[in-house]
Image 1 (cartoon, rainbow, N blue to C red):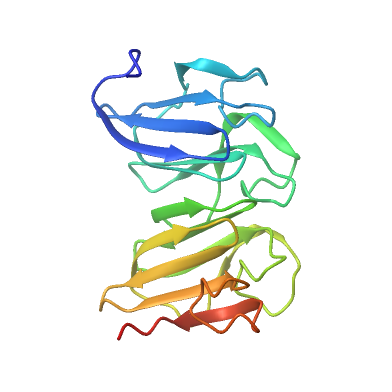
Image 2 (cartoon, rainbow, N blue to C red):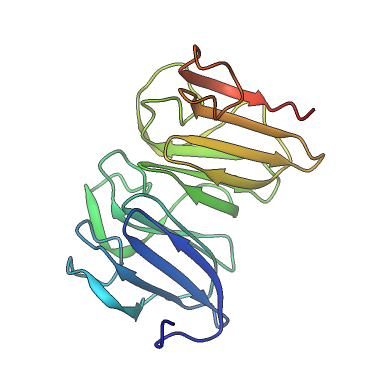
Length: 206
């Protein structure tokens, strides 16, 4: 049992760090911290949960490999940790050890993160992705990474997102599921001969 925590409503795990969201909208973190993914202002790892200094009530959290994300009650995005491919959405530094307010241009309703990339859905259900794109994580035909949110084409009314190491799934309001990104193990529902699924592929459920 993690004794320092109480009334936790959500958890998110990265490669070696953990985020916890409590019932008061406060974020706690512990674990690995070499890229500042704990958001405490330093780079020392910690076995003890630390409460982050965020100026607003948080509603959602997500953790990538070595970066972290939080969405407040106004749909604004906060991010910290590694940013070597622009995965936090910051354009000024390779990492941040403190939460930064990230301008997305839309109110974030859902968020998740993979190894070096981030995916988010707006309140209207449009999907955006940014960060690493080496395996089609941004649903683009090229492999250039982006620190700016890029709209994922052909998707709308998305209600849930789930990001793996290099692939993403989106659940739409009508119950359909789409996937894109790394398909070397057929995680995107295509034959493994299609290593990179650069466009959202609808998953067929028999």
